[in-house]
Length: 278
Image 1 (tube, rainbow, N blue to C red):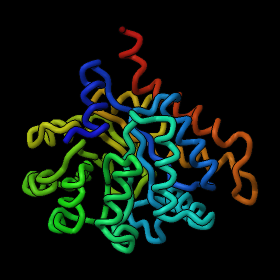
Image 2: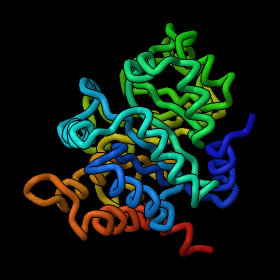
Image 3: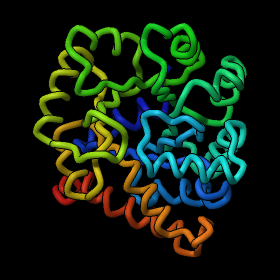
């Protein structure tokens, strides 16, 4: 079954372009503003949108994304409302791929079968669940793939050649390479090291490899795009959102624009050279 992710990445590859993947937390700072931001992303240059599912114990996330999750939860965001957010986005956009990223606990509580049915109906294309290893594929990965969703796995600098085949076994859509060891937003990605890592992963799989963690500037986004099939930016966008809020953490008239403007700037880093050459 071909998903929007498969189609989008194949189209970009045919154009000789890397994908620009954005991450933002569902419901941050409130559901209405969150939907407005996500709707603005494709026009600003996002090729694939990752949406975080707010959770109280986000072990892989740095302070900025943890704070975003807490703002969303404080604003009443739930997994049901996250799917409503996707439905709202799909009212105007039926082509941009949507990936939900987060942790297994909220899905387990929702009920796997019900969640997968509702996610598919809402217009979700893929899942990244950071705390489910390949040994637990029967929990969610295999049912998700059966339901027609991509299950995107993380590979890291510590994923060696012995472990990599297990990580890749049931991965689909793309491989998400975590460019640094540690939590989101904690260091900067090194393009040369990333290039070597991407080449190593590609020896094991034909899937596209998108790289995230530690990418904050258009220049860094451009350098990673040259080394991989896609560049993922999350923390920098979440920080731009946070800086636009008022003293009480509420959205201001500049919130949507702040995120859209940074998205456009980063997208130019990823896409710029290829577009200039056309």
